[in-house]
Length: 332
Image 1 (tube, rainbow, N blue to C red):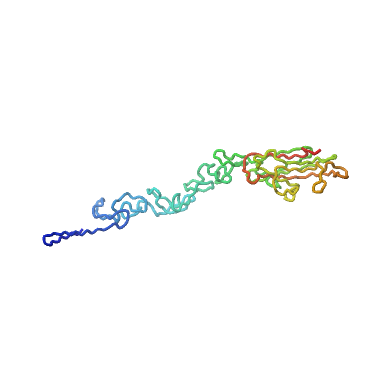
Image 2 (cartoon, one colour):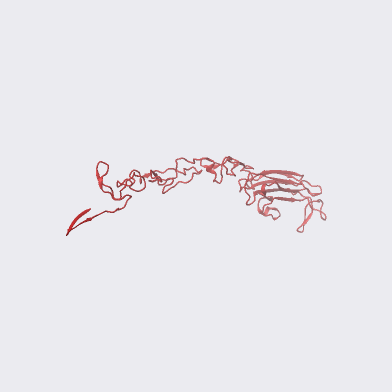
């Protein structure tokens, strides 16, 4: 402040010239000369009028001319788990630092912990958490073991509910009936009213089951009794369908031009006498060649059945029951 007095006549005029320096930036206003409280004296940095304890926020809180000097900001830090090496930066509390690649950092590499043999959340522990919870969103489900979700052999997790584990048993076993070549052999089925019953659930949902049966045409005495029938005695929610193949497993061997469409029931019979598409069909009666009589021949055949879930059918633990009979309902 500069003060100057001027006298003019009987009038005394005092002109006071005030020079001030405005705030020039920072978190505080311009300070003045005086005691610093540290045993010496000096001038506070520009912008400092109200010092406060230093925190980690990229500002000079305590007005000592330094920023975040009490923290290791900018220093390299070592990675943990999937979080790679990074640089120290202020954390969200302002009271400490974190590695930039760690959870919440500017280059966060972490993710929710999953069952994969990695430390996804970068806490120093691999696959830590409830073993079942880690597998709730996994296609297999079950429980986390050695970096992979799995169920005990022969079991599957369908409901993905904590506490139930792998609640469904595979019927038949996972390595049975996996293809036409590996079809489950049901043995011989003579045309004397014999019946075979099998059950399964065709799990997992996209699984196909294959069965093979040999329909025996026993010697006939005037009427061939062969009448093969396959049907679902139990078909929960109508979820399952069958495809028959005569003698092999190609589409050309699907009888009667059925192609590869699925059915709930299939019959193949010789215990009849009928003209179908202009062809005399059936062997009942049969015997010596004469008008309206067929020759009695051995028509023993191997038949394959493919069982699968219908498109859109929800998987479940419920079992189907397939019955295959021969001559159980012979036409007189």
